Image 1 (cartoon, helix red, strand yellow):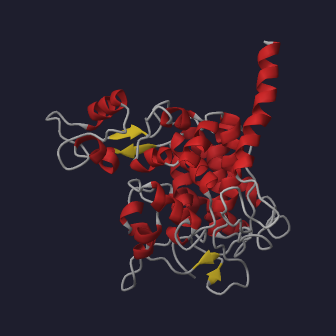
Image 2 (cartoon, rainbow, N blue to C red; image 1 turned 180 degrees about the horizontal axis):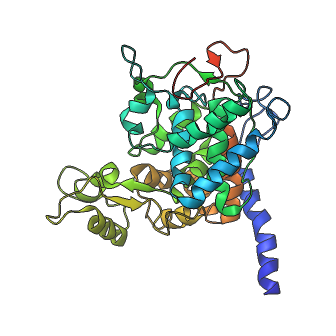
Length: 350
């Protein structure tokens, strides 16, 4: 037992060192791959405990509500995380995804095809209602969503997994066309994924770490069904998919006539859809990534190596937190920025 404890204690720093080495920056601000390292756009704009003076206890209220909801329904954790992810990749983390469409105006992000399966909006509504009563016109929907996503994932650990810097305000524009254009697709190849992430100042380590969010949650078979039954249009299966896993997915996703049932669901991580751990990467390295975008990580040597490092849960959780801090700061609006406001209702502009 003592030897095992020593082994873990010395292994964890080594694993983290390997991740950091991938991003080693020289004196000119470039990493080992020759890519320019840019400062996060949030620097100097967001800060810890932004509401400490003007709405004391706001973050505690968010956590208490979210933990109570997740305790009753563990599936809410991946749902809230996904809402946050989809919000940040379109116009930045400004809660534009939460806006409903208004008759006579452009269709909102919420109604874009990639967002039709999202849920959990009512949790954000409930938190906003309570905070508006306590601190009117103070806590933004964007901050509530960012905190709720962190707290939903953190519930099983009984502690926050990463810091959330607050001070965002809410955007006033929400367009379904932008969501269809900017959201990374489950069918994307590595080049496309890397380009979309780079446009948001996220590097390959962030790409791999954030893909690890697929360790929790479920997916409809219609999203990845082509990999199983018609990969090249000839009724074939994606050859990069583990054969036994492909057989399992076919059994779960087919109806009695052995045709694809697009509404059937499976866990995104074959090791279990509820535990937030490194199971996704263990499965991925066995060619059991559910989506084409998952399998794409293995087509790039750097990404594949990072994925192998993240088979260690400690290394994955540490980097996931850092990458979430970066993602949640994409193109943030803060007080004084044009086009921002503190919404009274997260579904409507003021």
